[in-house]
Image 1 (cartoon, one colour):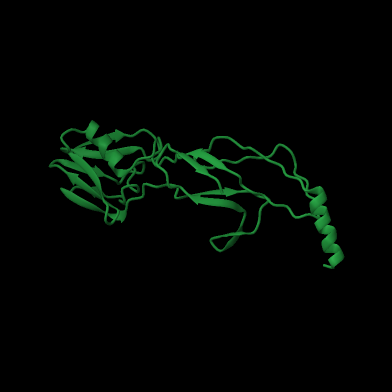
Image 2: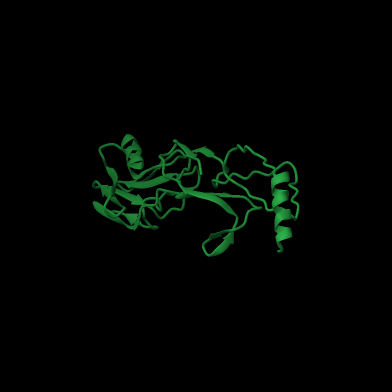
Length: 206
């Protein structure tokens, strides 16, 4: 590009600079996605460079890990009688799951805790009690278990607990380029960690 072309482009920047602001609001779907489509077609002239910036982002940290009719049951066996305990949809830590169990199954017959040092779930059972993780609609993966029957007085999950369903939040704009994600070109405008407790406000000012 010649000096004359560069000066002409600079003049275009200075004389025709235009800024447009969009305030978007809505509700995420069950997969945690919020998609906004502009009501009008954006027009871009070839002689200009265009930039998209995120000014601010606010949302509540509402990312449930237990969903109704998907993984909302605790199946257990009490003295050879099969029973189930349904959970409401929500975001549960292991201690929340245990607290709900204690309210509904007396005498600490089934007790859950998480080993802070290695992130695995500890299951304590009294005589006559078993946990059935062989059924599909259980939250066994949250507790770090595969499809097994837990029948020992003390059992440690073979896998790490997986209570966090969304470690990171991505804001994508389909007219943006220049970022990389997992080794591929991406249209991610901004990303940040989900590091606040369930229900609290996430406020980002990049």
